[in-house]
Length: 397
Image (cartoon, rainbow, N blue to C red; front, top):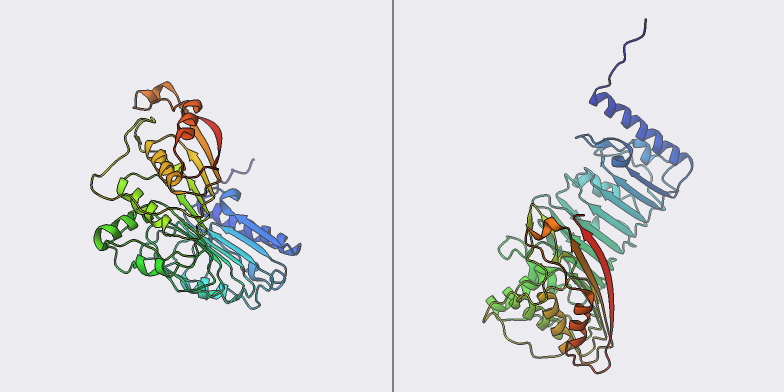
C-alpha cells in the first residue's frame, strides 16, 4: 500500500528553509569566502516572517575572511554570539532586514575596518548614528527607503566622506564635519512644518561639500526661504558639482534654484536627471508631451536672478523628455553659464500604443524638432559645444 503523500504546511516549509539557509552559509564559510551575498527572496518563496540569520554567520571560522557582506530578508536575533571582530569586513549591505537599534549597534561595534555601509528598507530600526561604527575608516554611508515613522538619522562620524539619504520620514541631523565631500538627499517633497526637522541647520552644516545631490524638495525649500525670510543661500563656497533629480513644476522653484546656483562661486559641473518627469501610477498621468505646453508659472512669485555661473564648464542632461519646464531650466542655465564648454543632452523619446492616446497622451516630438529647439537656445558662452543624444522606448505595446 502506497504511503499517503504528506503536504507540508507553510510553517514546515519555513522551518526547512531556515535549515537550508544555515547549510548554504555553512558551505560558504567552509570555503573561507571573502564575498557573501544572500537573498532569501531569490532562494525561497515569500513568507510573512523573516528568515532568522543563522548563528553560524558569526562563527570564528567566518570572521577572519569576509570582506563584503550583502544580506536581504533576514531577521537578526538580539545579542548575537559575536565573540570575535569581523577583522577584514569592509562593506556591509542590509536590505529588507528586521534589526533593532541595539543589535545593529552591537554588530557595527565588531567591524573595526568597515569602509562602506548601506541600510535599505530595514524594519524595527528607529534610530541610527553613524558614530555607532567603531571603524575609523568608514567613508560611505547609504540610508534608503527608511520610512519607519519617527526614524532618526544622525550623521556624526568624523571619518565619513560621502552619504546618501532617501526617505520621507527620516529626521536628519548632520554634525558639522569637514571630512564630508559629497552628500545626496532625496525626499518626495519639502515638509516645512514637521517638528524636529531642522532643515536649515543640517544644510548649513553641509556648506563645505564639493558635490551636492538633491531633488524637488530642495527647490521647494529654497522658494519658501525667499517667501518667509526673503533670504537666499549663499554659503556653498566649495561646491564643485551639483546634481539634480526631478522636474521643476513652478516658476518660483526654478528662480530660487537658479539663484542658489549662481551663488556657488566654485561650481564647475551641473548634472540633471529628468527621469521622474514622466511616471504612471494608479491611472493618473502627467500632461501630454508637447514642446509648446506652457510652463507652470506663478505670477509674482519671484524675480529674475542677478548673477552668473562664472565657472560652470559642463552641463549634462539625462532623460530629457521635451517638457517646457525642462527647456526653461536648461535655457536659464545656458544664459547664466558664461564659460560653458559642453552641454551634453540625452533625449528620451517615448512612443505610446493607440490606447494611450484615448487617455490624453500625445506622441513625443521627433528628435529632429527637439534637437532644433535645443540648438536654438541662446547661450552666454561663445565656445559651447552641444552634444545631442537620443534613446527610444515603447510603452504599452
